Length: 292
Image (cartoon, rainbow, N blue to C red; front, side, top):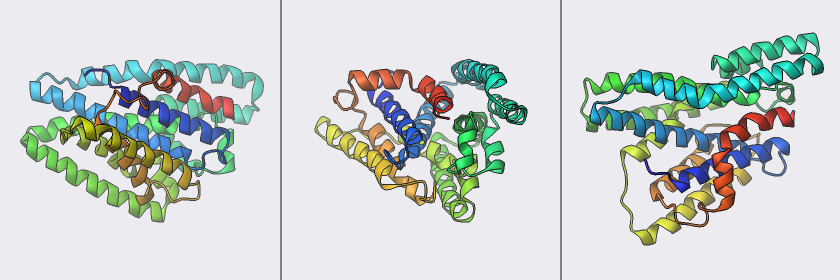
């Protein structure tokens, strides 16, 4: 795929919002929704990789996993190593043991489940967890493990159009589940894959159902999507039940930006978004340990 400035800009906006929120909640009370934008991007890109491979009959699940490993694990492992080293000098024995547990959970992509059992994401005790932010990487990795296997399996029995409809149905059902669980158990809804899957699937639907737009429509539509995303950062707070129906705002906004497919706009094609988008993963990994 040709490099898309708009996707890079979405990464930049997402990581900037999360960092600002973590440094001071009052500056951007809904900045945590940047993670939701990351999920949409991941769903779009992973669906594109898998579906294109299935259409050409060249898709390899093993190659898919290897690519994800190369992209995610080295930087994450280095972060865990550095924190474990620093923890020797900065943490009490009990806290160091907890860091070891959290490092192992992060590297095995189970940290979202561990943190779900320990506390709410917005609790003050979360500031003592140096690797709390890796929960989202665990959610994405769990999605990466299941998603290609599910699509490859379904493709054996369904036509491409039927597969698309199945994903539409899956997205709707997953969204309903997210809303229901958010009302019953906000911590489970926040941390676990079943209640986050619809956000990644929504990104996948954007790829599966491309819309051809006139050039005159692309910029206004992109602006609308960006406004929806940014408004969610301002309107919502840590008291907002999340990621229930409220998270539709940044998800729809991110999907609209992807649909507009406009990389010429200065809103998404500038030196700031270039830099932030390029380094978004590293910034995301290292900002939280600095904050806490």
